[in-house]
View 1 (cartoon, rainbow, N blue to C red):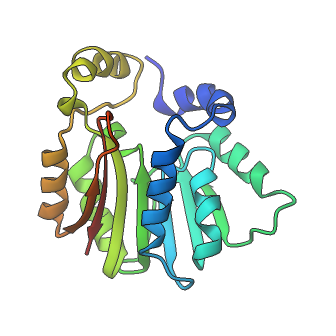
View 2: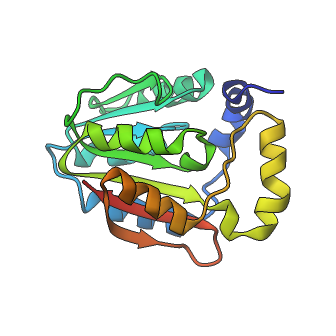
Length: 203
């Protein structure tokens, strides 16, 4: 069995080279997220990958702490900061479980293409809720496997075999988990033809 961090280390270079699969949807998510930011916003991104999202958001916020479990992903992210004028982004090697963030200290938490890879989702959602200030937002984009029977049947078992936690989710179930933690669903969107759901929950 491959450990998740090793899996993402192995894929990091390819992940960095490949273009975004659906650029229009990605840009929509960036733009919609920024509607909730100000230049005083302090945000956290979990599962930041090669750092592109954190860097795109940097000019619109006060600070970004971007975390990932892959050393290679963090190294690629930091390389993007070299010779740039970005000074408000920090990339950190960490899982969400290992993060020690003060309660009610953040304006936004981002988790893009992450929640379906987390085993203890309800615990993580509640931990994020506590991190956020009143009216803070949790922005997530999640593959809802159970809403696509082919993915649920064929892809999820492969993910579990190689050591990734691909927990079957439905959009309805994910929204319920957010509401159970105390979030109000402020925005929800599904790219056409995709099993991904983009949700913004407000504290």
